[in-house]
Image (cartoon, rainbow, N blue to C red; front, side):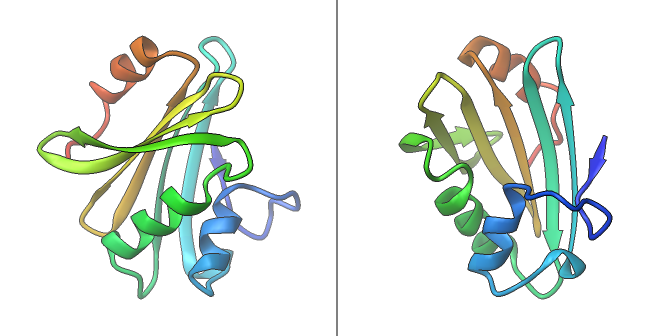
Length: 122
């Protein structure tokens, strides 16, 4: 598990979303987990003073932005989220539950759907 705060000295993609909101890591709680076995990532982020809709938009616009070659709305659990397709074949789904943005990323849509089935419902 990786908690993205000031103890992490390296860049993390959550930094782009925070910057778009004029926020920094001290304003956020961001937790991510990467699986080497499945090359998948899950994460959750909340930012003080930022509503879920605005946070979701910032993530959809900035997450791995240079690598994203496709963006589309995707229904998940009765709510509209985003599916990003990256150069190199990674698929990412972003959705919100209240003011928390959840993220799941995997190298195939099948693996991504399996991961999403265990994620918190919107």
